[in-house]
Length: 379
Image (cartoon, rainbow, N blue to C red; front, side):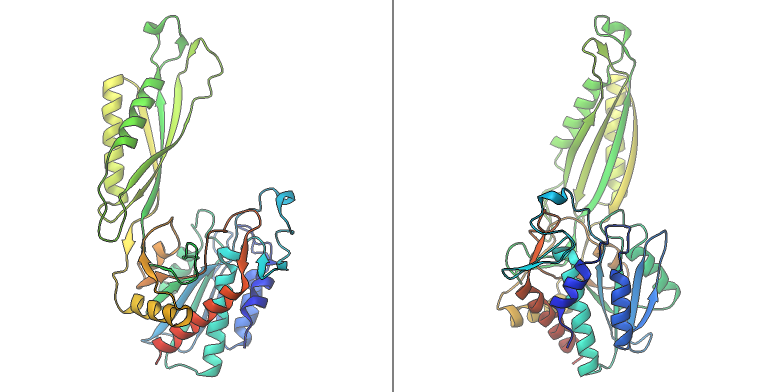
């Protein structure tokens, strides 16, 4: 039996801050290869990724797990109670960067998969797709794995992403979708001059204030059956003008949008451009816009996959999970175009914090949930 606690500590001790692999995928590749999985490194763009399959390629029943071993920076190391890559065990917790997000989740599904295929080899296949690029821009992580799988005729029938999904209590939430996310950068250009002679200037600051108000006060929608209302948050306005008597020539504004399935990145881009054009026409200020869409909104409709996961969670934890689409983004936004996908993992409220830590018993519970899911799926 693979101990998910030990595997978690071994992984946390790998200093795998994106894009550094840190030994985490090497460790997993060795463990999975020894257990009979066919492993392939799918590295791209300086990012390390691992594909592992047990069973025949192309089987009609192929269960997939997706996760990541990269972590965010530690921040102020002096503020940590224990060194951030020490994986110190104290009072029932494992401390360390990535302990919650999400090396414990990877350890749990890897341990469950290995034990399952060795104990009761299924009529089907199991795929583990593990990336080293989820915490950064995610350009060469799960997308690289899915591109490689498509070229190699590898496919998952269904997939669980093992991200932390529970707000406070183990088992309380399954993610069946995610809001879309996009960032927009505006550059507003006017004409610099002395503030005592406004008629010789074109001040971009009133224009940026007008644009900020219109975007942030606009109600995009009232929500849907599965999603909260979409939002547009102005996150920064930067001018850098240290003089009190100078009208600046330029200012910049950034906004972040989280949107439901009533919208697409393209439709919101068109709305943003239209609003910028209106403000430009009203003020005479030139407005340039740049957009980056991190992911589109999606939902895996409640059905066989969510029912399977929910029943397994309740059987092992005694908690009836809520089906939710709340939170930020995850690599499920990429997997959803490949196969039906849901997310289930540990309690996530300590992820990315100083003194990030995971409750050890929850790791064992998560392995039991994943084991039950595999047994039920292949029954």
